[in-house]
Length: 193
Image 1 (cartoon, rainbow, N blue to C red):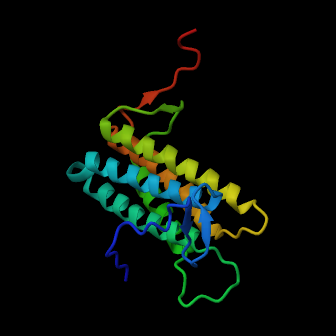
Image 2 (cartoon, rainbow, N blue to C red):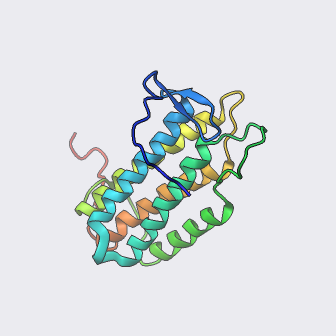
């Protein structure tokens, strides 16, 4: 159980932060950037939920699950698998979380017409917020991929898969709240030449 009695500790005043394992890293460390961006994506999903809520209860439930999963993913990234014994079992993203996203994508996508152009970010306020959440999730994914390429860094492959599927789901969700794609704003190549 998480227990936060004191919000400031002053331990980060030197520009470092603690990983789940207790190790200290600079706040600009790629691992910290990765899970910090996952947290930012989570905040964007929360903002999107403000716009989707009661009008899209099924979608709101899905987005709520994603927010919880993104916290799991942050915990996963903040506790790298270094082979050292820990006093607890670290939380990891598991294949069933990725599979659940795939099922949700398929269910949401079934009523959408196929795209014949790229979609511009916008339409309804809810769609714009979901597109923002999608782009931040993609940035988190890029950072996690970069982290996995660093010598000595270990990243759970399911974490990368989860971010990839989550951004796909957020794209489909934006189309759903855009009147099932009818209010999508489509890109017209070279329109303003």
